[in-house]
Image (cartoon, rainbow, N blue to C red; front, side):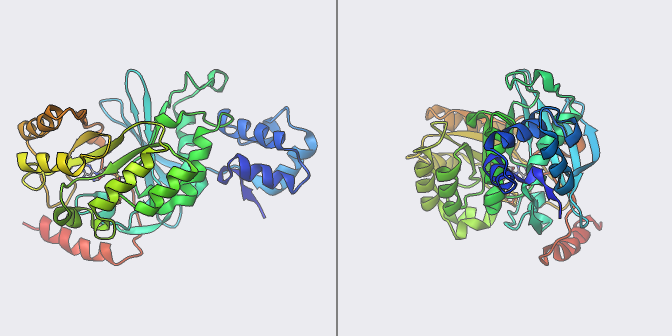
Length: 369
Ligand code: SAH
Ligand code: SF4
């Protein structure tokens, strides 16, 4: 039996090697080779005793998900498609900016939560990604971007920020997400600061509490509506964890968060959630939470029933929040020429729910003139 070492964080690898009589520092060495130096060949791990290298060769491997396509957008955004087997593909997007490089990674093949404006949700759900598949996106993209391991003193990393905003709901795959987060933060692996790793959630309240206790990183919450009636429609998980409970969970999270605010994401849907009145209601509902707003222009996808709010509407909506002293940014759409913008990540998912079959009929109806 061969274990994939990409599935293990420091604690896991220490325990694994201890079973073979190896000391904890060996786990740190192996982690450094795999994640900092991007090495998958045990023979190249020169400072590791020959006896351990032989054991690793016999019973372990380093197997990341395979990149099947790599597209570069006009604005420098790069979208990678990974094959994760069984007919499923997931997407990862690298967004270069002047001061940082952000990698947007996926945590599930599809998503079961079915938000009405999200292309991933519309595809249905297949399965959770393994730790190796989550951290493997970072491992692979680091290499594809030509990160030089000798310069890997963390400050010069090409990938300086990670956001869990690709396909899937990270908190619905909590165990694996937390293990992958620990690797991102580990100095022997990727050494990212907690403030530069952001989990985005549609609001799974109990999992938010666990993340806070087990591995607090920066938090973004997909709000999208100022009242329960509308949010129930847009983000169906709201029926289980309504706004009042969600706001309370945000405040509990902030007690241990590395940043002193939560980022509320708000997708701008023309005529649905973008009125002046709704902006004011939003201020009221989030009144007790220290927060910032990130307005996301809606990115259409085939068959989506919504339109993006016009630019003047987004500006006005932002103004109302800013006038109330809430820091508000509007996300620049990046990579839309290669369908890499928020909510356009479709990958390819063999739906195990019945949703896709129904949607194909919907799509057909929309497309047929
Ligand atoms: N499941 C998590 C993280 C992935 S989605 C979540 O929902 O937060 C990342 C962000 O993209 C979320 O804020 C989501 O609401 C937003 N999004 C989804 N579909 C979108 C679309 N079509 N246009 C713009 N943003 C979208
Ligand atoms: Fe899932 Fe997030 Fe898309 Fe909702 S917005 S369906 S939670 S990926």
